[in-house]
Amino acid sequence: MFSKWQWLLTQLTRTLWVRATLFALLAVATALIAIPVERFISDPFPYSIGADSVGQILNILASSMLAVTTFSLSVMVSAYTAASSSATPRATQLVRQDTTTQNVLATFIGSFLFSLVGIIALSTGVYGDNGRLILFIVTIGIIVLIIVTILRWIEHLSLLGRLSETTDRVEKAASDAIQQRIDYPCLGAKRLNEAEPPAYIDQAIYPEKTGYVQHIDVGSLNRCAEQYDAEITVLAEPGQFVHPGEAAVCFSGELNEEVEAMIRAAFSVGNERSFDQDPRFGLSVLAEIASRALSPAVNDPGTAIDIISRAVRILSPWRDHVSIADEDEAIIYPRVRLAEIKLDDLFDDVFMPIARDGAGLIEIQLRLQKSLLALQQICPDCFTQQVQHHSDMAQQRARQSLSLNADKQRLQALVDHIQGKSV
Image (cartoon, rainbow, N blue to C red):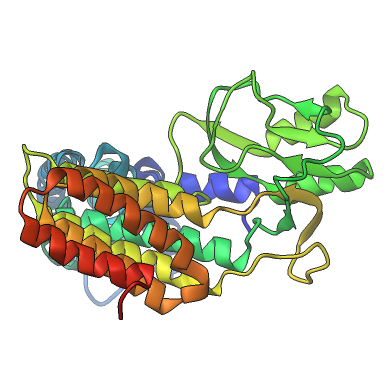
């Protein structure tokens, strides 16, 4: 389980400028490393390289890397635009975190700075004969690295910004978040029974910011509760919209400014939802992609069918989900209570929009019913209630939109099978 600072560090490493800065610093250090290394070499090398020879190579490298970096940035922006228009704007944050693109751009920027620093150092005469030879060898290594990077970049460009590649990213993010809730149903805390609110519900702490809960540092909350010999109940789950008028936490001990500050610091609130602790967000984004594909302007039912299949893959591992009891050994933070995520909500997030927007398309309705049936067959004890509910709701919508009786009969046969009325 990530602490707040580990989560913030992870978010930081996903940004382009951090990688570019690290590569740039490494490039500058690499270009200047020949100066101190040369001092430890007493004997001259059997070969020598003229300053003009190395300088010409570095000049070519600098000019070409500047052009390639500019081109790559334009391609990256175009890919972001394509992902936003073909999928959904909510998916672009995953495209922006693409490590291959970030490493490629950082390599190009670092190579440009390496060449620039090398040219400046050569013009000032700080390199001796041995230093120029070391710089030449390092330059050859940089060129090999650039060639490998360009080859990877060419291959990656065939996928960057494509709808299928963007959808893959969203599916993986949603699957990872689902798996986390299977391994840690309450993010390592005790389960909150929402039907029985805690006795200290009136001792509430309100958030100072308005936005979405992106991350909760449950470990920090547990340390705060241990320090004051109290219990903390989290009312605002990851992904929930919070504001100063609604309580986010209630505290069983005596409230003071220090306690409130510690508890508020454990919550990361932002303008957008995050995929990390919020599996519902990933499913909602997939549903948005399907809804866009089903719009009259796009008219791409095949994408919606693909999303339905992905939803089955994402939800299938939920058969391993088990509600935890207070004495469960898997509880890491025993002084914190947090509600489990509801399977009903997961089904609503992904299946309800598709059933609504694809109500008049028999191919969508058939695939939806077959996928619901597949989930029921995977784990009847786990999925039957939700599957039957959404099967019935989808059929009601389809009955009002489909005009052909033959289509309605085909759909009815599947619905009867799900509801247990036929074999």
